[in-house]
Length: 257
Ligand code: NAD
Image (cartoon, rainbow, N blue to C red; front, top):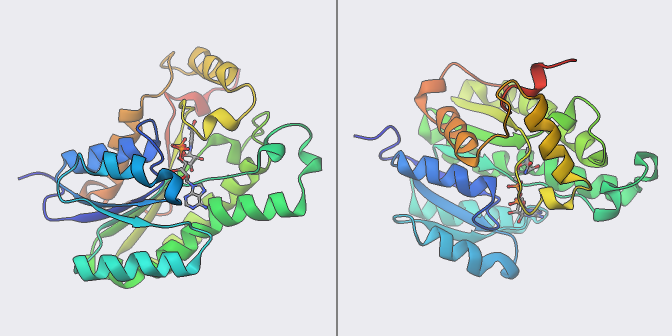
């Protein structure tokens, strides 16, 4: 008997095999969880379908998180497949390229809106749409991905840092809101990982090098380590933890000088 046998989860944010969401999927699936995946637009459909197809009995739905119609469609379809939802993984973020370079004070109204809509508000929209399915689990877990740039200034992270601060506050407010229904909401603050989204950040290679040098473990985090922490958060092993941000960054954030 595996830890998550008989459980169902949905994962938002797989783009390719380097996505953090895919590492999380592998950890959850290895523990026995049946998974549904969403993809953002037809451009990513083939990629995600191919990856999802390597896991047993996986499900696949389109979902751009800026569309309330698509979000509703996902959970209607999922409700027809399963009686309850035990885990929802939010591994989605976006900021316009021009807002990830140069002076933060140049962030446009639209750039600020888009970054917050996709990277923070979407967690509220997804959790709300999933609520009745999550409630039926009796011990459901929502997990989102964040970064240290929410708390301290990370050069070049700009508006994404502000959106992540909003996401982390959203975690706490959601956790307080849905806790009585047996739903936990937590975030993983991962150290830098070389993914598609990360490549949009100027100087990312130097950031990786700096983290590895400064972190107590003297290396960068591995995708598997992020995936396994999501497994812990999605499982009853973490049943007393909610509203929390857990660092999976080789200890980087504890260091001053
Ligand atoms: P990624 O590019 O593989 O994943 C980002 C995902 O967001 C993609 O699947 C993309 O399709 C999705 N997305 C963007 N806009 C969307 C929209 N409108 N609708 C639906 N989906 C949309 O990159 P990743 O690094 O795996 O990022 C996953 C999460 O991890 C993000 O929240 C990111 O901020 C966070 N994170 C990444 C790092 C890192 O160093 N890579 C560190 C800490 C946290």
